Length: 406
Image 1 (tube, rainbow, N blue to C red):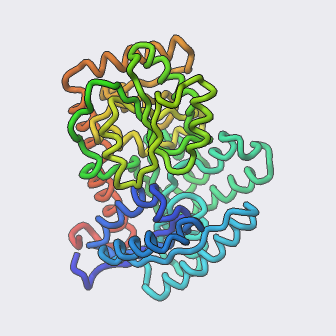
Image 2 (cartoon, rainbow, N blue to C red; image 1 turned 90 degrees about the horizontal axis):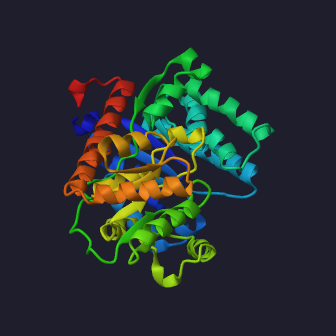
Image 3 (tube, rainbow, N blue to C red; image 1 turned 30 degrees about the horizontal axis):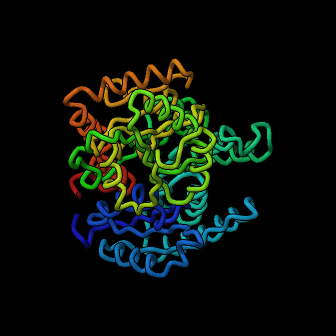
């Protein structure tokens, strides 16, 4: 696409670009799309990140190098509902101004709060609305114990959800399981926007195999947060079962902010401090940490909302050649792990189930091509290049530009 023919896209995210998720699941895509599209980003940055002048300056420089415009707004946390409504209001005001000024043709919204901003901006400006749903957010709040299912907030958000689906010109979801469910939603069935499945992808140039770790000690790994959805107690229990088979086993946890909670969990399970290591790593350094692991965990609380979940860490582990321990009823995880033979999926977290999964994991690790299988699965299913190409096709369809104009 020639530079003078570029059409403008405004990407709205309620996550900050300075957060690891913002870099892996927003910026990694946009940097590759930017040569063909005029892209601007509105993000909501946490106070701790906004106050770090050096990191803010580095992000501005990175975005400028990619020719991506950036409007960072302040994220407000409390009181929850008024703070979010305030953020939506400022997001709509800024998005409307940017859309009119830069002739934005597509509003690409990541998850529900950003989608509310995009829906309202669409009504004012007429721009196309791409709803990147990411997950069933209202149901996640209930399944996570944050909202009562019979409460007014949940009922209100389900109505908002229906309005977002009805307003969307196209939708992106992370899993085939969630796509099947979406097609049964009344708001979707009545409106039938375009629907594309794009799993959580990883930059497989960065998350790629390095030299295999030393045979001893055996390192069982974990990357990311440990609250609400990720079942860290069950992960530690799996580690203990694994350590009974490999007494030299150690656990490596890569986590930014929850070190005290992690240590408390290990203490409850009687794990001595010398049996684990906690590392706070920037996103660029995570592949080096994963390279130290023989196997890694992505064990998630199974629930209705989690059929729409595709954990980033699964793609990152596999891209580095590291098999994964997951569980059933979480997106397409069981299908990926078992059909590709790149990991094991826990069924019910019982002692018997855990032991069977440990045995299955060590059987896989004994196979000489296990690392190559993991890498192949990642490249087939979770390549950032594949995801970028899919978004490019959606952008072209929404902007009215055919493939020949690319």
